[in-house]
Length: 131
Ligand SMILES: [Fe+2]
Image (tube, rainbow, N blue to C red):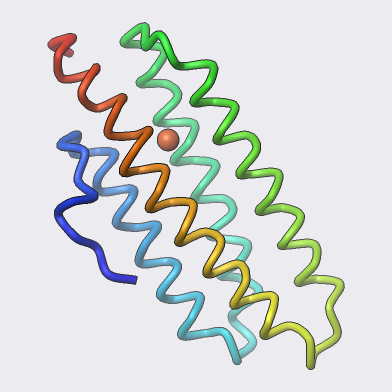
């Protein structure tokens, strides 16, 4: 998945974590057919939670008015991710690849859309608040 400067929020820590998420999605695709895919799905899920926690911490620290709405989006995404993870675990070997492709596409589409609209909205607020 290609990172482009249009995805930058201008907040260094958030941008670095977003780039890492993109990198992990690429790793997931590279490993889609080998044994390490399991670990990558697990790591990606954990990294997403860590990243959301950091972002939400910044929302609260800067008294972002949309903190609760934004947190709900994160929570819903984590729930959807965990459902796909479970689907992957339960799939037979020959059915695992389509689930990996679905995870890849879902994470990629959600993340791009979320960064472009919601994280950028927060970044504009954050920068204007002079934090
Ligand atoms: Fe976010």
